Length: 433
Image 1 (cartoon, helix red, strand yellow):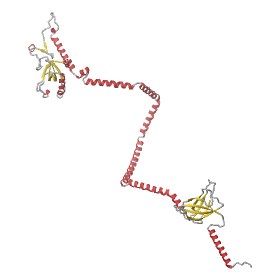
Image 2: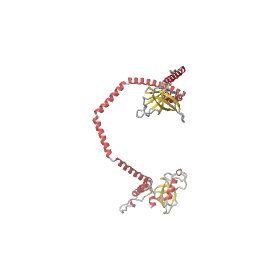
Image 3: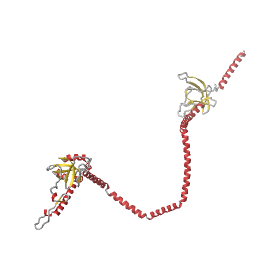
Image 4: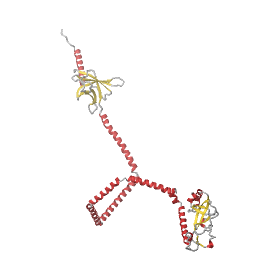
């Protein structure tokens, strides 16, 4: 009995075959070939940026596989794991990177396998590859434009600062000052033009004078050129003199001169202060007074010797005439006046040594109320050596007299100390001794 297939079985088989063909066609349209042998690899990403299942996997731009599954890894970072199917004929080296990149301008995503050229080992089916996400066009543009944006912002801030400074500088006063400055520059240029015209006129008028000046200058330069040897000789002489001066010990000479001047200044200072014999001789007029008195006495002696030679030379064979008395001034004294020729020296009559301050001296007697005494009373009159001498005070020591002299010289600048022994004036030097 022959086996007969019922129509229902045929229909069922046909339906199953149709469904299988449909499933295979659907998978094939998705890029899955159920009849090809492929290896499975996994990649973990932080994000997938729009990539979906059936996205292609490429090596150097050639499609070698496709993405078959995308799901969360369910870890603390919520990362995403992607499953890839790659043809077995392609071996993936160890440490290769699966990079998500933009496949076209529409935003489609794909995975690009970047092989490692160092390692010789290869991934096995089921291994997990290293991941990388390429920046999209917007991110790349943003990354490229960000420095430009920063620089543009800085430039705008700088421009704003510059404009603020310019506004502060070019205010109304500054604009007025600039306007005045330009006006002054314009006037200056006009003045320069007038000056240049005047200078040109002057040059035209004085060109003959300038020509003579240049001729004179040329003559001078010619003379210098002709006398070059003489000038060289003069310079050599100056050089020899400078060498001699350099060799001379001028510094030591100057130091010695300074030392000598210092010593001379010291000696002059001592002389001005009345120190030493020479200082006392210059500052004290006692020697002058003594010399004056000695000269006067010598005149009197010569006059007396002329009038009365027999006082000094006695010869019985000769008669030199009558005896004539001569006073201290050299004047002849008559016999009737001899008794009246007394010296008026004040109350002092003994030989006590006293010091007085002489304020005036005259050939004729001065009245006590005279203006020459400037109202000072107790002025003592002393007639000595044919002159009337007027003094103040009586001091037993030279120190007291000198101390009071400074007070008296305020009224009588020429006052000085004199010494008397009895009625006779004696030199102060002898009184000191």
